[in-house]
Image 1 (cartoon, rainbow, N blue to C red):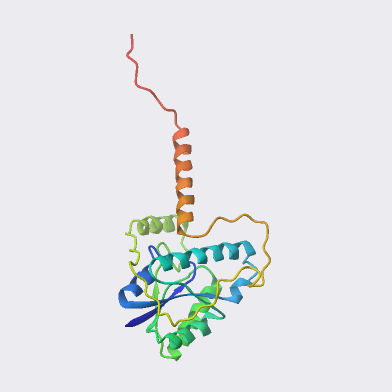
Image 2 (cartoon, rainbow, N blue to C red):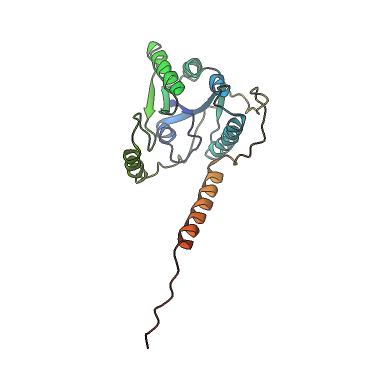
Length: 223
């Protein structure tokens, strides 16, 4: 049976996830998240952001388990960890979304591409919805965003099969990662919580829009 590593990064969900869905069609999956210490301790990475990420990872693992799978956690430099995981699991390669967000991410992905080529390994990159490597003016990006939002959602895999022999590190807390919690309030992680938050926003938005216009009753006949 084919085996594919699905590398999760910003895309901590099982629904509308092209790499996960395509990998599930091929056979067994190794869904992995790598704790990259260079990012965890980056000056722009606040403890609250990591705390939210940990909550999202917890719910991602739960969602994967509902489909028969589980999340595999590793620590270290993805450029080293992912080739090791391919060898360990005898996977055919890696599926992942492209990350255009940070310069660090682009450099890391270029390093990974080179490392995999040198070792005769494969990775397939997927374009995320409404993403682009180009710096676009707002009107152009708005048009791109609206166009991409019209595309159909990627189906959720009905079954996710993870080889039982693939080991995983336990999900850590902030202290385990060498971070100190702050007092910032963060939302609950996970797809269900995100959908609830979105629905609340849309309902308030609708009420605000309706409330900004006078509600006229039926016209009265003139005497």
